[in-house]
Amino acid sequence: MGAHTGHDEDARDVQQVLAGDINTYANIVGRWQGPIVNLAYRFCREQGLAEEIAQDVFLKAFRALGSWRQESKFSTWLYALALNLCRSRMRRWRPDLRPLEEAGEIADLNLTDDRIARAEEAEIVRRMVLQLPGKYREAIVLFYFHDMNLAEAAASLKIPEGTLKARLHRGRALLRKKIDGSPGLSLSMGVA
Picture 1 (cartoon, one colour):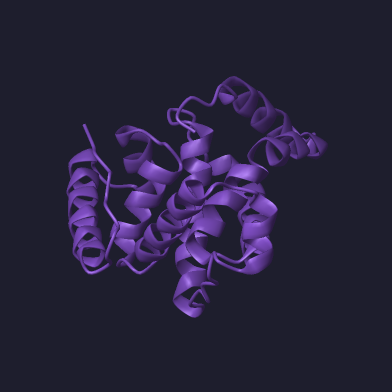
Picture 2 (cartoon, rainbow, N blue to C red):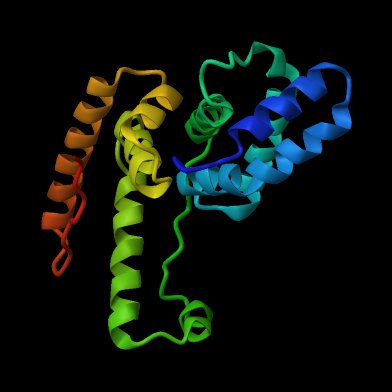
C-alpha cells in the first residue's frame, strides 16, 4: 500500500466532491474499497462484517471529507478512520476464527503438501496476531499485512515512529512466545 500512486487522484476527487460533485466520491470508493475491506477483514476475519465496516468507513469519510488535511496522504487519513471503526467494532465483537483445514477450502486450492503446510502455518500466525493486545495487533497488521512503511503506519495510528517500532518489537516478542508453544512454527518477521 505504501506505493499507491493515486494520491493526486485522491486529492482531485476530494476537491471535486467538496465543490459539490458528490458523484465523484464513487471514484474514491472504487479505489479504496478493496484495501479497506481487506484491512477490516484482518481484524474481524468475517467477510460480511468487514464489508459492513468498510461501508461505515466510507460513510464517515464522506461526512468528514472537509477535515482531511492534504499535508498527509489521503490513504493515511482513510486508514486512520478505518482503524478507529475496527477498534470500535472489535470491542463489541470477538472473531470466531474458522479453521483453514475446512475440506472445501483445501480441495479448491489444489496445492502441494508443502504449500498446504505453509498456508496452514500462515493461518495459525494470523490467528495469533488477532489474539495480541490491540496496539500490537494494529501495528503488525498495518506494517506486515498491508505493507505500509514505518512513517505511513505510524501516521495511520497517530503515533510517533519510535512508538510504532517499540510496538512492532513487543508484538513480535509476544508472537514468538505464542509460536514457541506451537511445534513446527517459526516467525520470520523483521523490521529494518
